[in-house]
Image 1 (tube, helix red, strand yellow):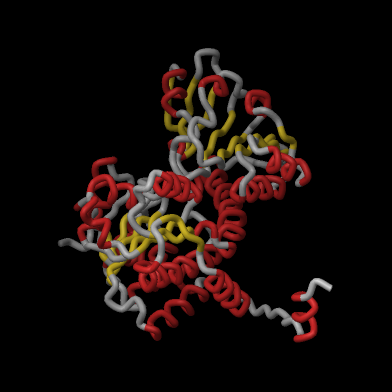
Image 2 (image 1 turned 45 degrees about the vertical axis):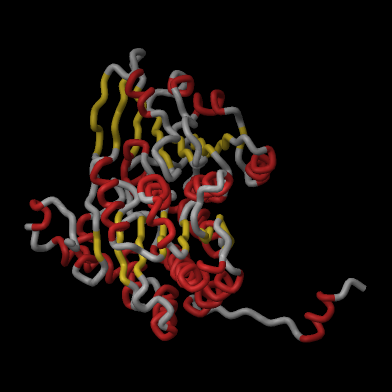
Length: 420
């Protein structure tokens, strides 16, 4: 079995692995929480010899997680979860450091599936998934291998939707720990991480000014909150489209306008989708877009913007910049689509800030340890991250930040425990 899967022309680039290793080293320097967790895991020996399969955005921060698990004694095999977020230099660098790497940038759908099969061929005992792709493939193509899995973890909101659907149908064959639902994940990763990195992807792709522009955000979950807040910080006028009246009220109180999609899209300069649902933007919306609108997706899968309908509507399609496609409509209007409608923060940028993924991946590493140790005794289904993991990571993060908190006195604890 090979340890790398890149096009030969890229392998011959002698500087590729060195460049990737430098990126990984830079990220590791800024990930003290994950480093502390890795040291603790190595000391406990709980992952020593455990085969772990990973399907995740394969860039420098993910490489740090793979190395943390490898250095804790696990046998790690990894592939990418998005064709445009995988970085060849990081793959080359990581493959020289121990983990098995099956990935390259912009694979075909067949190659993507083949890479997942390669990871599953290593017979992992624990899976780390992003979008539930590995779990879904395992259940649909390799049902006999499902019983080999002690448990899995899931990184994303979208993946949890799929996994809960599987559990509701009674087909999910092992426990999955909902890392995305851990407080130390979604309160930071989804809000601050997506908020900053989505706009970094948009700005890197377009080099356009946001201040004074009209920004439309679809969805006001934790990711949508972060995207809207950062747009406000950049000086934009923000409108939100929602289907949940409670979330819509939150948006109003956070200073956003809230309007129906068909009305809101007609005034938007930038649109960012954050719903996790399909066809948030379709033909009826494209018909109302103003000339020069920029469309970006911050949801996991490339289903939120109906790109096929945009292609069918356009009379001309051209590449304006490396991550920008311009669609010329019959009436002369231009619609600019970023990163093919894929996850803009990773397809057009480097993803979440390093310090944010330090927190998320520390939760992931401890959740994988928990799944490996306790999977056999847990019920099959989507399960929460144990509170102690959230608290352990929170304390480690405070220590790394040089911050400290107070403790309740015995009298205060007693007071809080009484009802009169």
